[in-house]
Image (cartoon, rainbow, N blue to C red; front, side):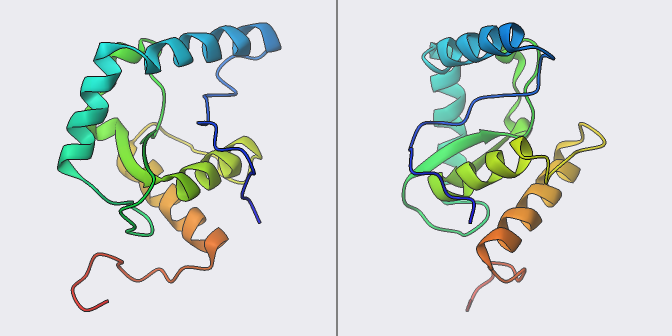
Length: 134
């Protein structure tokens, strides 16, 4: 399975080709997560959606970047998805391990691929978790 023991938030990887560049990006990202800009965007996204976009749970929710813009302050709402910690961690593990690879930066395409892969990893049906009566 793809679950980690750690509850640390995933950070962007593979953004830079070497360890030094990756370390700098991770440091910038961690700093950004503490910023008023990120807190506002996170709060706005969580206000609109208060359950995981993959498994529909309402517990232990994170906000996931579908991709990282060079200037993190340019992140748009459509770049973000609400995921529970379990689905968020699995999504990043699939990306980091190379199981998930994206051919474009279209957020609809990335979301469809990510959601399908995480559901597959969890053994969750591909039926709509948000439809009435399910």
